[in-house]
Length: 583
Ligand code: C2E
Ligand code: CA
Ligand code: CA
Image (cartoon, rainbow, N blue to C red; front, side, top):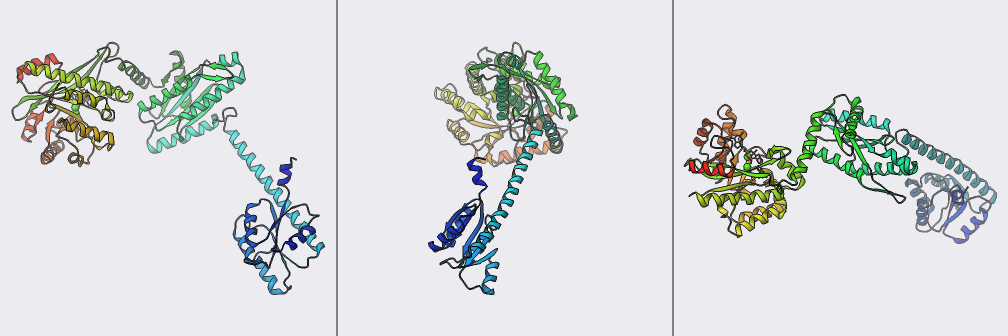
């Protein structure tokens, strides 16, 4: 036994007496007892020490002390959780009458010894208490050791010893749990089968010890990337299974899978060895791709083999469609980086008609992308990707410059006062690139601010962010107008219309398409126009395709119109022709 653990088994006795000579006398009497003796000279000090000191087996408490007497101290000791079970023996010079004894016992004394103390009686009593303490202490220790052993066994039963990650057994329990949760809440989760590429050669060339370190490092990296509700399990050898919960957004899921791939690729340095690895991942989504949870791991494993066949260091989805969609997105992301430089973008312009004169008063600039390998990609698809990669700032500035150049060119040749409306995504208001481009163009008089309109979404106006509000006001101060795009599809809180510098609302195409069959759509259009006019705002209806729709909107006093009925979005040269025919 080490000195420290021996000490832990040695009981302590607290001697409480206000008179030093009495404490000294007790010390002498207890010399033969195997216990550590501690002294306190008041009731208060006794309380303090009783709480502080561990392994206190007994308190010898003098009854007569100034300030706090023994009875009071005993009562307080009984109230404290840490001290209520420590036996107390009262030592008293008070005459041994019934009443005093009773008071002593009711304050929590276990025994009573009167002064002058009989050495034999004292030693015998105290030895007994020490024996009792040792028995109890031993029992407590036994319980503690057993329960930590039990915890440890429980942990080992469902964890991997090397990485401390959940093992297969635990993984299947977690899959059951995730399935129940997904079913209950109508959510999805993804199961990733992750296999380390080239791990075998590390084991063969550098030895198992380094191989083990690599696995521990990978386990660590993966664990750091997931959320609390997710699971990273070691499936066996160099295979891990990662359970990602709440993955309803597939773009977000792909982002997370890419992070895992990236983390596996980062250099590992162990004992001066530089190790460079990668991972192949197979993905199965529950319940989108597979409704039988017991097959999830097998199917993710099959998908993982697809990744191996495709040259490793990549992911594959179990379902063909999802796989195609995910890889298309990645390809788009890659091609988008060079689209401006490679001159793959073009801006088309869709005329906007003044209802009063039935003549064009402006155009909306709409971006087109033609990529040599991917073909023509619709903006609805690539704009959100450009937003998530951050390219939207550069793209937005490019569209803006193209648009004002086009307007200048057209108005220099045709006797027309033409406005141009440019779409701006919310993100463009959170970075100054685009704003600076606009500001520069206005200052350089490349376009008059009154000929410019910026189309924003309702969500931007509800995004109560300092930066956004500042840019909105700054652009407004330049004299540029704003219109709210896709009006009616988003939020119901309309108070922002009064608060923000808005001039126009654009009734969404989905309402216009309801004319003339859908009476509800028509009631809504009527209400939107009335409300907008009440707030002194102009109204544009977009997506007009038929003469009936146009007639209805004119009757409702809609101010401007846009749609295939008048013209599709056109490249600049075709627009020029259209304008000279229709102005
Ligand atoms: P949006 O701003 O609501 O643009 C109107 C969309 O409706 C355009 O689709 C247009 O071609 C289409 N459209 C116009 N009239 C009709 C019609 O009569 N019938 C039908 N079925 N469709 C009509 P497009 O060009 O595919 O653009 C889609 C969306 O992409 C735009 O919706 C806009 O949100 C976004 N977008 C386009 N260019 C840009 C851009 O330069 N910057 C940003 N941030 N977003 C852009
Ligand atoms: Ca628009
Ligand atoms: Ca729109």
